[in-house]
Image (cartoon, rainbow, N blue to C red; front, side):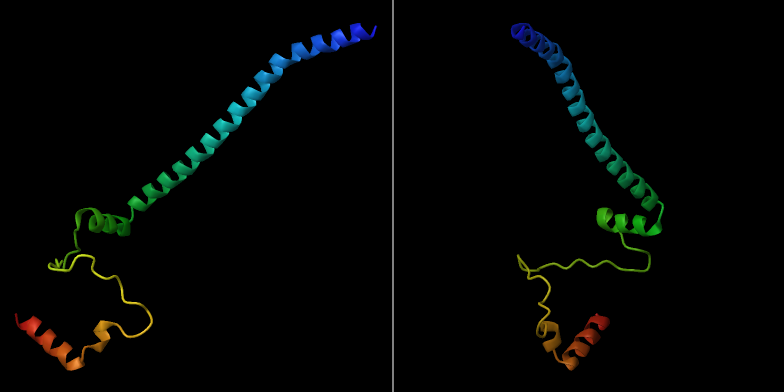
Length: 117
């Protein structure tokens, strides 16, 4: 009797293994598709926001400056040449910057010479 019950349990387990594997594989596929859908929805929201931004003048101006180096009418673009390689970044916030050490008279005379040229 025990042997028959054991055989019945083994047969039942064998019959349930394939459907359980299929269920778990489908469940894994569902969760991977769900994460892909979430990523696609996030990308879609980003792109829709970019489309909305494209209709603003600020976006168009920013893209014109960044991509084509255009400047608005009435402004003049300058190209500074001869800077040393590896030019230092912005001055540290603590202490006086080099521009603060130039006397006011020197600044004004330089401005006057620049305007006269």
